[in-house]
Image 1 (cartoon, rainbow, N blue to C red):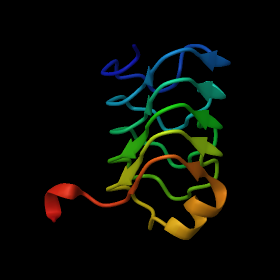
Image 2: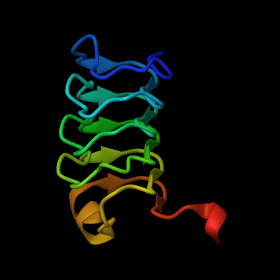
Image 3: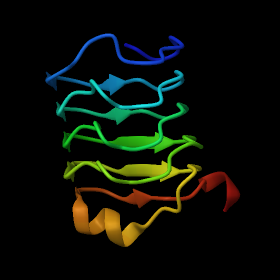
Length: 117
């Protein structure tokens, strides 16, 4: 896996990943090079990404994008997520209408820090 590696960019360009694709806790500013499809879960939390451009179009299970304080736009959001979407504590206001119109979500759309409830 590629998490906790202090990566500033992905070392390879991925196509389709059979399984999970975890790139959380790095120094990424872009999702360039991410796979177009992930059959299980995708996690890009705790990075410095500014946009979701380059995110997978299809995620078979959960999509996680949280604590990306430099995120300024949701453009590039996946088209299909088979499980839950976790997107919170980011620099952009989370527009749930935009997300639901763009993405077929099989589970829950979680847009707030549950610890604050």
